[in-house]
Image: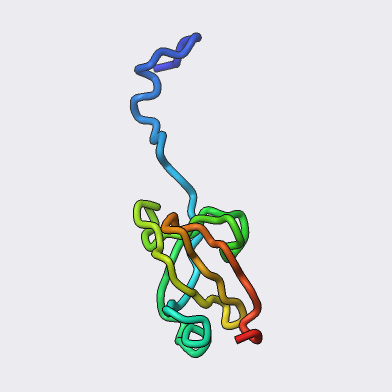
Length: 101
């Protein structure tokens, strides 16, 4: 059935309005900077940024649906970068090369 103009609200009933595209990446976590540097990368997390890995200001989640923000902690990804989430909002606040550990 063709949709007539202007669009009616019934045309949008099947539209998923809260759909989000999150990017998955592998990571590890730890409570201290020096501790996380030696952790194995063994978890899959998801972020809302545009890059392969999260950057400062991106939100990071433990589930692909984006309903569970990561807690305040240190995280390592890509065997070369560490990032930190603080403030209880799942937002990456700092990031630095792992060789600074």
